[in-house]
Amino acid sequence: MESTLIFKLKMSPEQIEKFQAFFMEKSGLVFEGRRIQEMESAIAQRLITLGISSFDDYYRRLASAPAASEELNHLALTLTVGETHFFRTPDQFAALRKYVLPELIERARPNGQELRLLSAGCATGEEAYTLCMILHELLPDFNAWKITIRACDINREFLAGARDGTYGERRVRLMDPVTRDRFLERRGKNQWAVKDFLARPIEWSHFNLNAEDYSPLSQGELFHLVLCRNVLIYFNLKNLSRVIERLHAIIHPGGYLMLGYSETLFKISEAFQSVHTPEAFFYQKTEKPLPPLPALPL
Image (cartoon, rainbow, N blue to C red; front, side, top):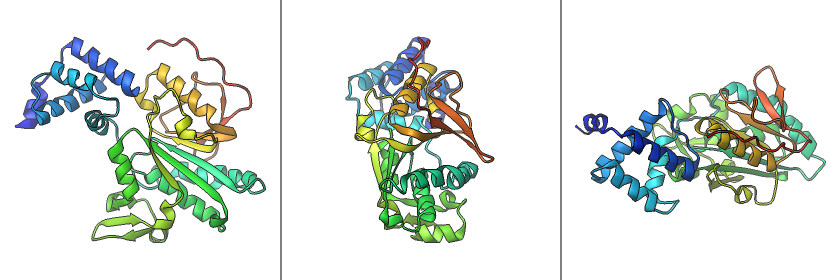
């Protein structure tokens, strides 16, 4: 009954524009084309769940709530894709293991043995834990290093799951048994939990990449590697350029940025140069200053 009702609830063009502008302002998320239907269905579901009679009433509720309201977080949970697993897109992690991380390790070894990594849009945490697994494999003296892996997401429920570190069989399906048993322990019939030593270097943070100020994320230090995979697809060109500008500012000179396979900096930023490997490509921060942002349409 409810699913049928959801499809019957339709927004007017004016309501669609209001909600589009709201999400753009509050989170930088863009809903255009086919994604308008996703937005409409998600909001219709909330109307039914909350017993609210109209889209306009729901909009007023959202617009009058604090930016970090529980209701806005419910929508973020629905409207952002959190499906992931350990070693998602194996070729990218293979390139990290073979090229980028060894290079960063060799640079850092005589300079304090310190590495700082960022998993931006970390969802339920598998990406951050995977990075930590690879570093453990590459560093026999891991405990002699100062390793910081900061992981952020806009969705508080995803972050709660990441901190808990318990995952079903589907999430571990790409892990070989030796790696799985080294870093995870079985909990129940179909559950695996991250071992304490793997979780120790990871700091979880609620953060909106559309924010003006990235200092709460960087905490006064630069990152040697930033993973921001399958996140930029939610931003329009103007906001995407701003996110790249802010990420550039918190990456160490010579540090690396990795995007998703469907994402590119072509015609967006000249402050990174692409570095190709047989498995995947990265962007490396160049020494020249970031050029001023062009005046881009919304």
